Image 1 (spheres, helix red, strand yellow):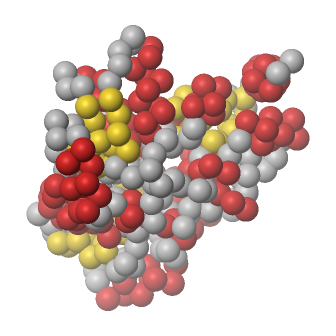
Image 2 (tube, one colour; image 1 turned 45 degrees about the vertical axis):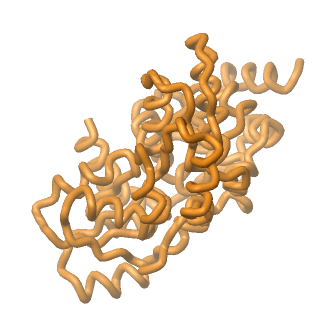
Image 3 (cartoon, one colour; image 1 turned 180 degrees about the horizontal axis):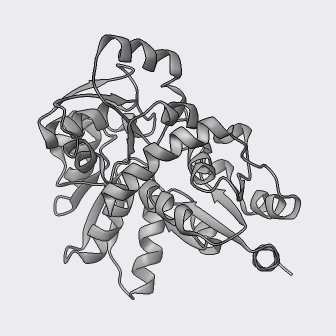
Length: 306
């Protein structure tokens, strides 16, 4: 048996499901049972009947799956290399400092640790951030950790957003600059520019479309246009290509930068997924109190997203 056949056999034997984020390379996407953005993965994790969830993503995603399924075994095929740097920019100490200063609800991006989610009133993703913040009565909101997503939310909702920490963000999306936009647009003047709300404000302002990863997938699939510049992690292009193939369509997809790569995502490999299923490693473990509090914040988001 080849590696894919071994993975499929173990999935069946152990009643396991593989959830993969849109940023995974094609070979991972092809063996996944479900592929999506952070919101879609949270919803799928809350609905699964599988006994084991193998997460092809970064640490906070696997933690979210565990929070929503405390009775299930959640496995992350690689532990050390999959820590999302942005998720670890916001911690308990920073939150308590701001909560003492401002009497405002705390909305945290799902790209945060379980400990951070446990202190939040509600979570959000890039797909629903404006909707979640708009649903709150208050006009002053504490939000973290991504300052560029905070800019996007403020612009969409008109609310006052205090970003914590002040300089939080994603190293992949912060690479994109106006120079990149001008350079690629000069080469492809007819192309539609799609960017993620984690991009810098000046890049967002130049975009034709600002969307979550799955929002970008849907836009390309449903659009009559033929050329698209993709301003997010490079492997989203592979994800879109797989969907286009299913529909028998061909469109030109251009990365805004070739080096827009999340190295933490790429630590997941087919070999590590197989090992994870064989040995049931590495299991995500969280304490009951953290799960209880964080689950409340995530479930509130899911309910408002329906």
